[in-house]
Length: 224
Image (cartoon, rainbow, N blue to C red; front, top):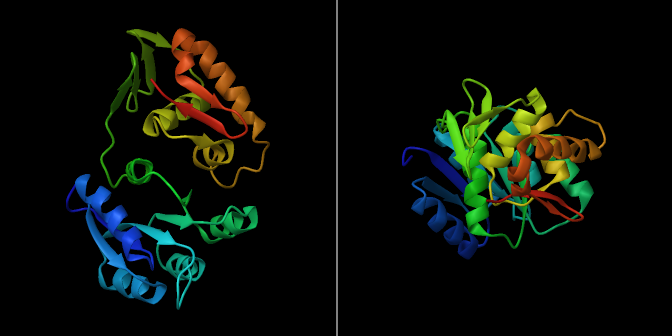
């Protein structure tokens, strides 16, 4: 994994160091930029950057301006770091093509988990063909799920939902985040569809359905 490059863009050197230390421990090669202009210069001079972690509030060019410029020529995955909780700001980011939002303060371990998950989904990191957790085995290639060795029958969306939970185990996921990643950003349905699918998935998983924890007022977390 040391050949996979991640660009960390933040005007706070302590924040860059914190993120860099955790990503380096995970085996990533980390580049740094302290403002938006430096971020674009670094990205365009190094064609091997696989993912960008981008702060919103920065001098010279803010994160949205950088993201807008990036999307004019690249689909590189972008995680935005923001201290804001304004829905309009998040919608602006999604409109420009952000892949993930993480609000400050955040757990560096959660950030690393999100980086891993996004790079797996974009096939930068080779995905395990079989994911296992707590007696659950999900085979991406055969598109099957078994619990304690017994196969269970899931719909296509239930399979994708369980796959997303396994990719993001121990991570708190909002309903909006699940919709955006499992149903994709162009889905304009009611977020309550998540609750319906989770209820069905839990039922089919039997006792293992308890691994999908409800976070009241937010969403869900898969935890063994």
